Length: 120
Image (cartoon, rainbow, N blue to C red; front, side, top):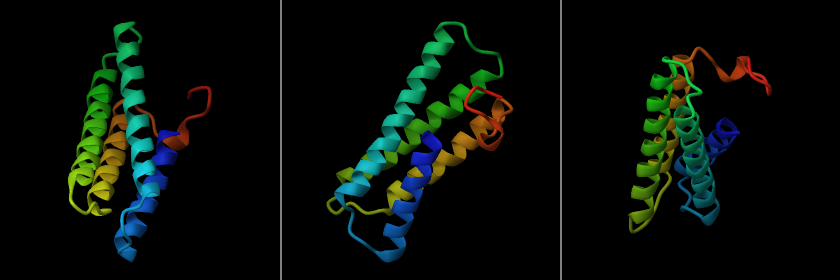
């Protein structure tokens, strides 16, 4: 789900940059949905770690997912504080987070296209 919302956010922000549209409420909602899902993923990962449901290679995954969530949130927050918010900072934030997510999935030996609903 997070990858789908991330791709939607990527498209919305890229279109905003290329078409030089003003930052709208819809773009803000897409960014907030992506950041919220990232935070939920971090909480789930931390709960699983505390419960002992992890392998040693999952530590790298956890660190990369935390970095992705922080990076996306920082870029979205910086954009929100600007006098005239734009699409460039959210685009950088979502792009960077998606790259970190992909590297984090590689850290545990998985990729989105190889996973199923019930695990791989």
